[in-house]
Image (spheres, one colour):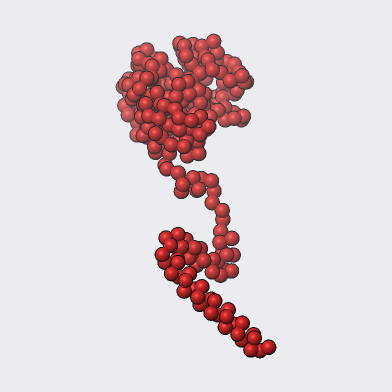
Length: 280
């Protein structure tokens, strides 16, 4: 019996030796074998398995950062007539690309000069727009996507937001507070909706809080009658209180300062790294 056992062990050892010899030759010739060897080397001990198990899982943002191009940078560099593949919508073409350069006005001066802030980017897709939030002291630098809700004269909207010295509107009140102090709100149903289009059914019930007033010099390429190169436009930025956190952005192109018609947009947070497959 003992002889049979010894013989069996010899066969086992012989099999291991033959397997190791031919396995080594196979792995060194097969380019895919490196993956197998690395996997075996990595998990050669139980302790290593436990250590890997205890490591925190990657977040979605970390996975996206490793596997996708820097879509933020690519969008900022996008041009008019360039293609884009948006997940769920397929291939589209940017009709226009707009750069918004922040401007400032010194106290007592009528001249507008460049402000030491990064420019913003707006990309037109028909009635839809993709916009990187204009930089403001109270604004995050985030991408937004939504629709233009203006197609006709916007003077009535400017009149509502500014009001008069005797009866100031929300924007004038906010400006008098130096964009600080008590929060300033307005409701969707207070806006001159006869001059707005593409409104969501609940627009009248949306409560907006004013966040920022600004001015921007425009550089535009492509088909963009709303914003034209060398226009100076004045922005009103507000965000929905609660709800879907939609953003109301009005780029006011006044006749004295601009040739474009201006635009009002209702936008929602947008994540290019997740939503865009590729720029073409």
